Length: 259
Image (cartoon, rainbow, N blue to C red):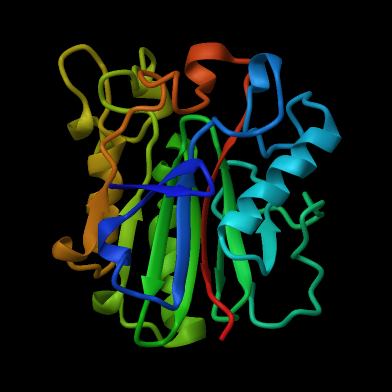
């Protein structure tokens, strides 16, 4: 991943997205915001107990660093629903939203919308189809992973936007790594098809699972980048629910820039 410094704020970018000037994206750390306590400091989630004014200020900061436009936040529920935005009159965008729409992935071809996922151990899987001009952002925790929300999102990109999966560029963001993703009760929580991602101590590699799901949906291996950064291990950079329980959420965002 590429570490970017913009106006004194550090955030990460995927190298395979860097050649597309029409694309804005970033994986933001927990730093450079205004929240304090367990939410210190760039918490963008309004539902974890943080002061709402500070959350809104943090969201404004992230959006400015992405180049402006309108942010889109989802009410993430660890499911498999995918939102499609093809018009500006559906009430999904805006800094202050965690609106009624529940979903864990969002797709658009509209420039000027920043698709934001809120994270504290789950993956953000960012996708871009440069041929059709379509972006997607997926919140894939272990529940979303076993439901294959990645495959569901790509399927909708194919049906709604005529995307060819082989054209998709993808990035798997910082999240709970195989060093820390322990599932003691994996036999009851995870389908048997996922057991191959476990080591001898019941730690699971969901980075590999997501990469496989992308490839199974038709994305080319050479078009995928994985951050390989564990959120639980890197407390100086990221919020982690496994580590702290009461904590904030960091932002992963992607969008098409306005001309």
